Image 1 (cartoon, one colour):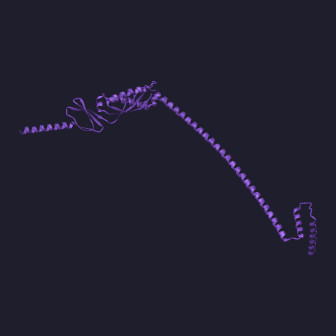
Image 2 (spheres, rainbow, N blue to C red):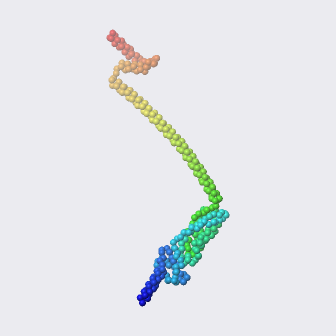
Length: 315
């Protein structure tokens, strides 16, 4: 009996442990930005979102775990032919996001391979309508067209294409060499144009400087002539003022002399002597003839007589 009891306890414990393992294994926690597609007996039944979920053992199963974050896929370079028959290699980068886990799980087998092939065929169709130059300069147009076409095509698969970018466009080596030569020639042409424009501006500035110099020189000469004329005018004015002042002083002196003579009330003899002195000063030793009035001659005789008397007294 004790052995049978122990065996029963062991079997019961094993069953409990087995039940706990089954229950724990059927508890699922869905992380943020994830979703789980659940099947019941092989048929889709529900999609679990973020949180704690419990599935029915042996009846339900998680068919697919899907990430809802935006994903990036870089596809290998694809050979494409332009409208003007130039073969080049183009690799693309696709940014997409799963919006419907059910459609993603059941819409297409191997969705990544499907998107890659769809991207390659779409790229060939778009590039086939463009020439080489347009292909190299129309990245934004190509990106927009590819995103629109891929978004519509992948919508039944529960995928939304957010962006498509052309990562690299690799023309053939001959085309690259020709493009480098063209770019070099264009740079040289621009350099020549810039040099010519610089020489032109330099010549214009030199001419303007010479013009300004001539104008300033002429203006300086004009100002110098004006100042010289004004200075000469000022000198003449000063000379005229000096002469006028001298004449005024002479006339004033003469008037003062006459006034003093009148105040002294001189005799006729004195006046005659002064007149004779004036005639002598007027002659200044240069005149050969001097006409003396008769009144002065008599006075002169008188003066000679006086002189003789004075000389006799001295002897």
